[in-house]
Image (cartoon, rainbow, N blue to C red; front, side, top):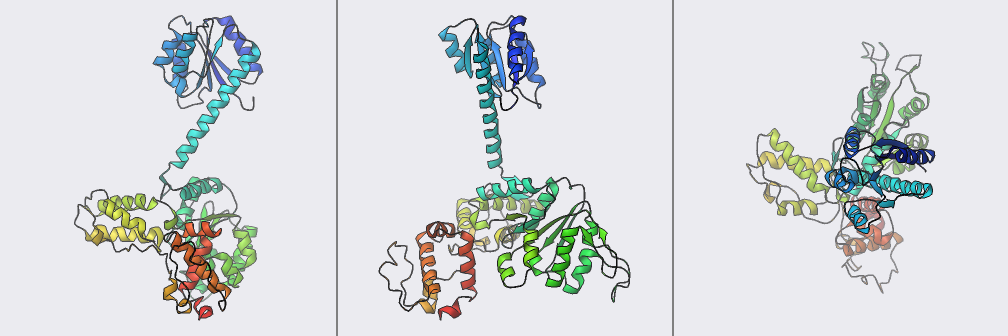
Length: 482
């Protein structure tokens, strides 16, 4: 047996019970005995909340009850374990009745040791597989987790990733668009880790002037620079024993990136103006809404720091790729903000939900949260109408421009959704980038504005298409297409 199987033998003949126990223990099972139906029920009750039995060997001829009646009156026997009925009565009717009540198998005395061990082994394996399936389904059904709301497959991946990295000492690098919940992710990792009793300290590297960021991170000694009137501990020291979260890490200047790399490699910090490095015990989580590979290629982010940070990467999906999570989030925000405003609202209607589903949400969860808050504040209730939501039904992603709006492609056929719309087209005189743009726009049109759908057609990652669309929307491709 690959894993120890916990077995309860319900048999009133002690010699048989001990024989079965000896054979099963020799095969690696953990065995307990019950001599009556009442004893069996007591054993099951005492296991509530602890290690449940995997298999029950049940004699049908018990002194205080019939085994079939015991199964009928104790449904947890078949719901929580694999029950194998064993009896001297080989009646087919009793076998059928036992199976109808949920028995896994039916053995007739005398039972050969090999048959007993094999049957219990298979019954235990079946129970373990069923338990794993139940746990997997429970994980998939999670609609919330550590501050997140969402039941989509994309968020289930995020939840499991957070749990997997929580107790590692390695640095976590969280990436994702603005408003997807990077700080929520960092706090979730801290809260489920063994460091949750320590402090969670967050620093926004893009919100602090460059000349002050080093002091904020590593501290300074009195007199280290003009205005340093007293000693400052610094975020890294304050988070010792806990977690340090560095948001917008790509905004950090290159000189400070060198010092951050040294800190990550040595676990030592050197306050500004001090000649002595001191050790700190801190877990570091970094985040950015930029593409770190693009920043690295542009020379704005150190390659060695990138590889040091991205030991455990977590990429947060944009709201537009989270299936129907927008509905769960919107209703959750309505409930929260209406309570804050001392108002009462009915559940969101289908017209509003349709509008929410169609909007592209370039600002992701943060945009949705702000829109719902504004709608709750501005509406008297008891319903939220379309007029209170400042969103559109455009199926185009943020920054997306159609071929018709691009002067460089006026002569090219516009995406029509027809699979043959590009067939027979002469590409003479067009650049590779122009042809690529036409192909992407055509694929998006065929998929009714769905970027993931277009990505599947083109056999590329959706993030690749989003980067290209964003590049074109800000004029990155305009010069090459003009």
